[in-house]
Amino acid sequence: MRAYYNLFYSAGNFLLKVFLRFKKNGDEFIPRDGGVIIASNHAAYIDPPLLGMASPREVYFLAKKELFRIRLFGWFIRTLNAVPISRGGFDRKGLKRSVELLKKGKALVLFPEGTRSKNGKLKEARPGIGKVALEACVPIVPAYIQNSRDLICALKGKKQVSVRFGSPIETSWLRNIPQNKDGYRIIGQEIMRRIEVLKEGSGN
Image 1 (cartoon, rainbow, N blue to C red):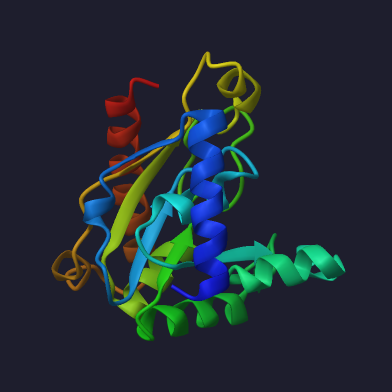
Image 2 (cartoon, helix red, strand yellow):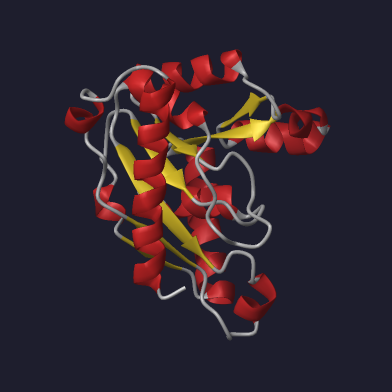
């Protein structure tokens, strides 16, 4: 990890463990090198840094481009590997950048649902993650974030914030999926099915 990223990673982990009793499981499923997609549910703004600090390796994120217009904040998230993407439509440049990062051997966090779930319930995956996965042909590690919507309760010690990773969807499976909209849907469904299994295993 780069020095700045490593400093933030270490400090963040310390603070999370002290104030939120942060816990992670299954990080051994994340390959230590090579391109990989980490696909997670998304219920709160804190989810991207939670995944970054739960991962044993440096990760990249997609963030809506409007956030980069806030000068100091934009600089901060860019330093922590955030990549701008347009929301509300099919952002070809953002998807192309995602594939490029994965082909360079980076770990990329993606939220299959495309946006935060306001009630915490899992939604259908959007086709973008399936397209990126097929074009990059890298493993997909599912992840489930628990209680990130309940930070006040976690701070009071009533709940625990955690991240659980699952076994990856291997490239051998992806190679049998057609590169079309039906294929993107199949991949999205499989990712969300695995995230659901992780959710059930967390007792949430």
